[in-house]
Amino acid sequence: MATSKEERRIGRCELCGRDDVYTTVHHLTPKEMGGTFEPTANLCIPYHKQIHALYTNDELAVRLNTIPDLRQDEKINKFMKWIRKQPSSRLPRTRKSNSRKV
Image 1 (cartoon, rainbow, N blue to C red):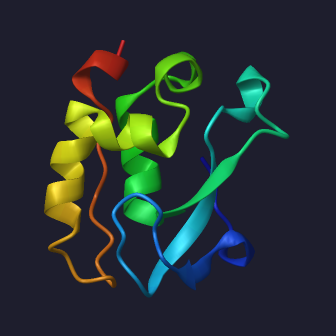
Image 2: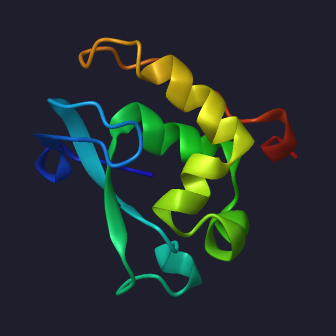
């Protein structure tokens, strides 16, 4: 996931609800899986990176392609509880999930 500074906007993350954070556009169905013209969401950069570190595009397309589905996912929910407590200026380091390091 490459994000240029032009693609970033300051706003509200649709997942964690934090305000005044840099957001990027997340394709709820990955573009590679036919989601080019499907719904998108504005997510804070840490959240966007975390989603792609935890899940493959196949998983995102099949079972995590809506905001409610993402919010209900156990791994994402854990991250949400943590990131909500962080200042909007913090950009935590993201590591790929062990299950994705194959």
